[in-house]
Image (cartoon, rainbow, N blue to C red; front, side, top):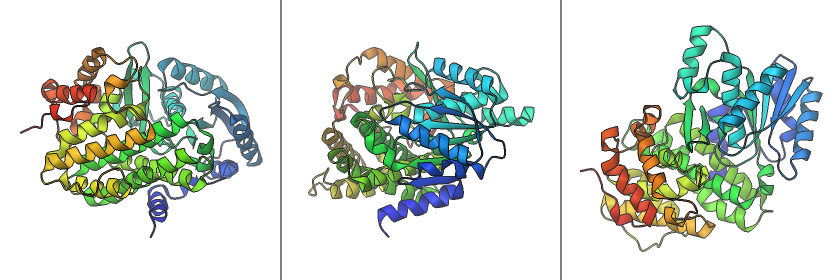
Length: 425
């Protein structure tokens, strides 16, 4: 079975009939929605980008043909789903009082709609829901439920359309926080991979790196645990597809097969973070939102965390070595002997890959980066609202260990010097 066929099988096992994915399928969104929602009133929350009018017209027609009535159209969220956009979207949803929410956009808009659905349906302040399981807790306490949400993805990246996460950013402080709750997973989702062919190159790169980060960090976190084998197939399939096909997609925007493979790979990243958790690179990325897009931040940080985690993750590193060698990102002659040597080899392969696709490989190469970001990242790592990231690390850290061990990882990422990284004895 090819990697493409394996990916399709895994996603079908994951989402069943609640997820429709493939090429040139956007006009089926109304039929999909009608299978899940009996109410007729719909509010659309739409991203706007070159050519998006054609897609939004398709969505409106498909929903109308399926018997839905359009109540309002709301502008989507800016990158990183700022608090101000969340407040605006919540307010406009409240004014339209819909039965079903249809989001059309990348991860930021879908995440904003997830959070807006919570505030509209359950009320309260967004700070009350940051953390794990707090939406479900409020639902159980009040007996209320969230509105049906059809998430239509436009970018091969975060897989927000498939997951229990909503990332919201306080722009004034430059800090991102998370809602993590199965209750906010969109009940139905659609991803027409052909839409991604017109995406800007920067978004294609960022999304691919985000997809790798999801699968990679979950794979690392599962190493040595009982569920490792099940996670390994999901995560490694996703990583292999992205590592192989992202350069092809960038080289030829007409290569529809490459964009389908890239979408499948990032979707498997979404599957990965539903069965496991991200950790180091994601945690640090939340403190870099003012200078780096999310995927690029993870793409820079993951090589350095790989070296830090190496003693605890040799099993996945051995498999990753073959993937990066087969894709031409690591010399076939390299043959690591120790766990740290494996970590250094995979880190170098990731750096080679980033160089090939045009992503920075160290923080000092990022415009606007300063030591303030390092302090912010260390402070955020000690925040109880983000402790799930520390706990998900294959080398788990307590808040008291952050400065001693995460500090050198950040310094290595700043300078590009892998030798600065200190392993826990």
